[in-house]
Length: 250
Image 1 (cartoon, one colour):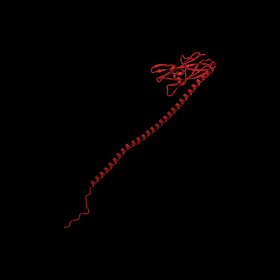
Image 2: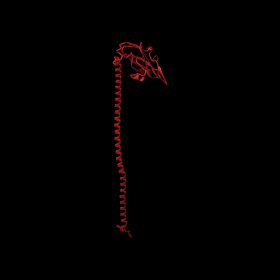
Image 3: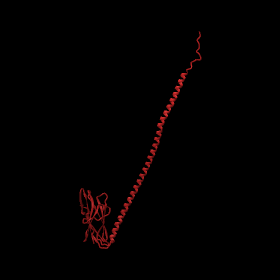
Image 4: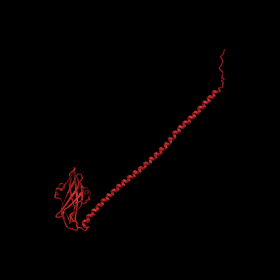
C-alpha cells in the first residue's frame, strides 16, 4: 500500500485574542520608547543648558580677568614712568642745589675779597674740602683762606688740623703731628695778600671713625682763627660756623 504525500495546505483556526495581545504589547513598547526618549531628552536638557550657561559665564569671567590684567599692566607701566621721571627730577634738583651752593660760596668769596659789605675783615677760613684717596686711609685736605682786599697787606702764618672721632666706644682726638706730613710738623705755611688755597694729606687709623675737624690758623703777630667743621660738611665742601668759633678781626 503506497504512502500518502503531506498536504500542501494546513488550515488553522484564527486567534483574534492573540493578535490583540500582540498589538497591545507593540503599543506598550512604542509608548515606553517614547517615554524613555522624553526622559532622556529632558535629562540632557537639564545638563546641557546649565553647561552652556556655565560656559558663557566662564567666558565672561575670563574676559573680565583679561581686562583687569591689562589695567594692571597699564598702571605698572605708568608707575615705572613716574618713578623714572621722579628720579630724573630729583637728580636735576640735586644738581641745581649743588650749583646754587657753589654760586653762593663763590659770591661770598668774592664779596668778601673785594669788601662788598664795606667792613674791614681780617683772616677768614672760607672753604674746607676733603677728598678720599682710593684704596688708602688717606685724605686730601684743601683749605681756602681769605682777607678783605681793601686791607692790601700781606699776611703769613701756619694752619694745623686735628680730627675728633670714635675709636671703638671711646671719643678721641688726633692732633696734627699724628695726621700731617713730617715735612709740615709745625703746620701748613701760608702767605698771601688776598687769598690762598692750602693743600695737605692726612692719614687716619683704620679703626677710627671721624666726626669733626678742628682747624687752627695762626697768623704771625695776629689773632688766631679757630673753626670746627663737621666731617660730612667737609666732604661736601659746605662749612658752617659752630658755637665758639671765631675768625680773626682786623
